[in-house]
Length: 410
Image 1: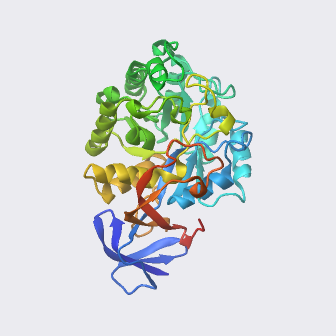
Image 2: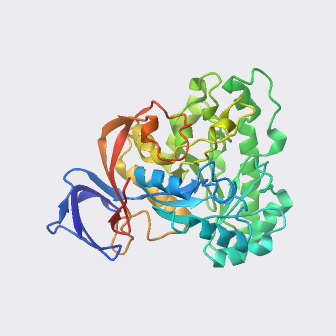
Image 3: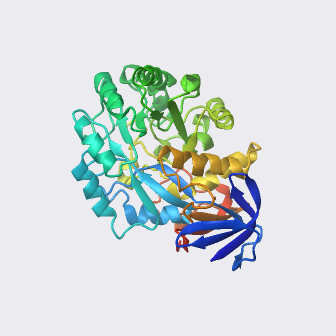
């Protein structure tokens, strides 16, 4: 199969090109005549979403591999990396890793990779999981929200970092410190009450600790879902960070009264903070953008901001969310590819993903950056329709998604 467009996103820029696809790989890139010509539609590497909570097995009523990967395919995401918590068992042992692999079998519509988890007492499991294909390991410095995945203390954090130093695998950290979290003071139906209970200081202090641990151990430490712009000066060398689509799209000032679908941790912060995150992406201080798709049943989102489950469902819409924000600020399609394809594939150590080059996997998204659409419940492919993006009008319409050289039905 040979496919062509006037806008193919390659490492050297956007150009007219023909991709030769053989046995699931990009075999050549040239100007030959194509079997299928997509005209001016963009051909880009499929997105790699390295931060997804699928919740199967154990909490499949929250999501599941079938629905999650259908949503991914509909959004141009060709690889997801599943987080180790919210499933039962959590992915904290080699046996649990194998159990999760068995749960994926026959259900995945896109590529699925797995993160392992670090919890108190499981350091001896890290190398066996790494040898079995875990892309890296995640831990929490505060309560994770589920009892099966307890957080680590400072000594346990250092133990895990020493164990992973030199392996090339990242230690992913939910970076908030409990000493800086506050009891709610105010109306629990008001978003500001929740925001003030999880201030920037909770992230900033955690990231300062991680800076010290990284320097002491030499481990690669990666901060997941960074929301606090005041922590950005601490990043660099072996301390990297991602941010999320929702931190780049929403602002705390705009969250409506009682709308708990906006709740996540760390929280969506103020408008000025959001713009600082965009500037950090421009400078390369932040390496990538992820969904942090963390769905639950509608019942768990009921109640006030202090009681409702903290997680935002957005997997299907990462590309248009990011592109809409990027185009409004003068960024390019190449920037989006760097943040959502290449940066995330580098984090998950997947060198054949996230780029269009000879020898790479033929995982592709074909999309129209000029077209817009409105998110309505009938479009949503993940299990539940609860998302703060309902009603949003976004630019970037996905036309086709290819995995290993084959189009995936949406």
